[in-house]
Length: 198
Image 1 (spheres, rainbow, N blue to C red):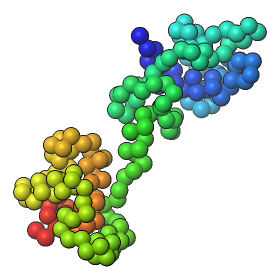
Image 2 (image 1 turned 90 degrees about the vertical axis):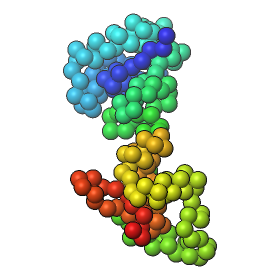
Image 3 (image 1 turned 180 degrees about the horizontal axis):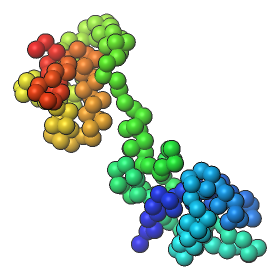
Image 4 (image 1 turned 45 degrees about the horizontal axis):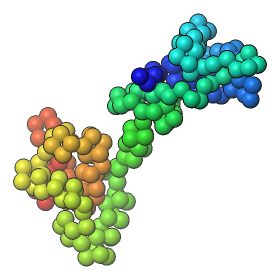
């Protein structure tokens, strides 16, 4: 069974990696880093280091110093999506260990209200003689056709129907907005994406 580390355990592990020198690491250096970087108390660091030692992730070397045991496999639970990821594949951001998908989703947002994007998309489409859904991906065409048939839909409904995350859905809708195929319209209490010419 693979060892699954929680957020505080990852913080301490990161501090250990920073404090690690050729001969191992000293616990006081880890405590200083954990306190300054994450606000962890001395007792919490000792408790977590003891836990990591118990599971073999930290071992005592021949010189009698603690060091990381690189042969122990562990995983991390992404706090954003809950997915378990191998310990060497997480991305550290703002003190959190997240998976690559959540990192990319958080950094690849396409803005809806972007006049420059609309203008450049219009110029590109005009220069290449693209009209309507020409030049769109199959997914974008399917989303557009669905909204055309329904007369409008919320991003949440599209997300569920097409099995996309909400951010992926918003990115696809933003591209359709930049092509001036869709626009926002308030219907009742909710915002819907509707055909641009409606």
